[in-house]
Length: 335
Image (cartoon, rainbow, N blue to C red; front, side, top):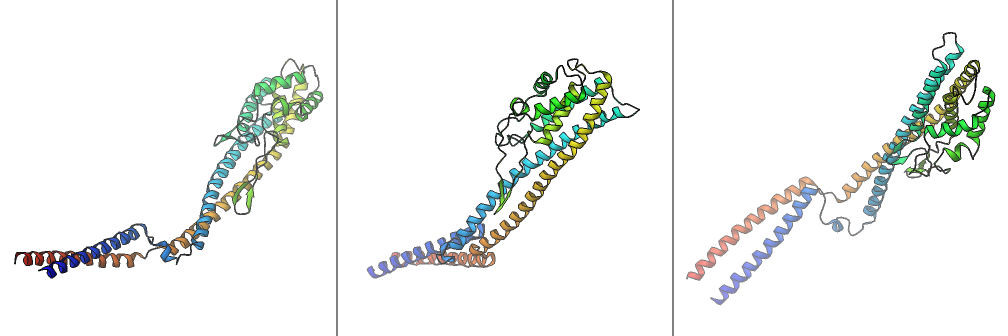
C-alpha cells in the first residue's frame, strides 16, 4: 500500500510538472500569435543583438526626421502662403498706382493712399504670421512678431518726410530711413539679425530658409507702400501733379520689387520640394528597416498556429490522463 501511494504521488507530480510546461508553451505561442514576434528574442538571435540594436537606432533617427520634416513642412507652407499674400498686395497696389500714367485714370489720389494704407496693414500682418507658435520672419527671435504696426511705421516715416516738397526728395528720404540701421531696423523691425539655424531633414541633408522681415526686397516693398499711403498727407505738401508723378514712380518701383519677392517665394518653394523628397525617402527607408527588423524576430504565423494546436491537444490529453489517474487512485484507496 505504501509503494502504491508513493507511485501515485510521483505520477501526480509528473503530471503537474508536465501541465505547467504545456501551459507555459501555450502562453509563449499565444504571445507570438498575437504580436507576430518571438518571445525568446535572445534565442532567435543567438545572443547577438548588434544588428537589432543598429536597426532600432536607425529607426529612432528616422522617427526624429519625420518630426523635423513635419515641422519644416508646416513652417515653409505657412511662409509660402504669407509671401503669396504679400505679393498680392504689391500687385494690387502697383496696378492702381500705374493707372495714373494712363488716360483713363481708375482711382483718385485719396483712394490710392487709402488702398496703400490697407495693403500695408495686410503686408505687415502677412510678415507677422506664426506657425506652430513661432514667428516666420523674426530670425532666431521666434517668440516675437518681427514688425511693429502699420500705424507705428507711418508715424515714424511721416516725421522723416514732413516738409519735403518733391517726389524725388521724398523717395530719397524714405530710402535713407529704411536703409539706416537707426531707422526702420531700429524702430520697426523687432526680430533678430540672426537667421534660423538649418533644419536637418535627413542624414547629411539640411535646409535653410534665411528670410526675415528685414530682407531688402520685403523692406523695399513696405517702403514704397508706406510712402504711397502718406502721399496725400498735408504734412508733405505735394501738389496734385507731384502726387501723380510720385504714384507712377512708386507703381514702377513696386512692379520691379515684385520680381524680387517672387524670387523669395521660389527659394521657399525649393525648400518645400526638398522637404517632400526627404520625407518620401525617409518613409521608404523606415518601411525597409521595419521589414528587416520584423524578419529578425518575427514568428511564423502558420508554424506558430500549428504548434499551438498541438500543444493544446497535449494539454487536453494530459487532463484526460490526470482524471483517469485520479479515478484509479480512488479505486485503489477504496480497496
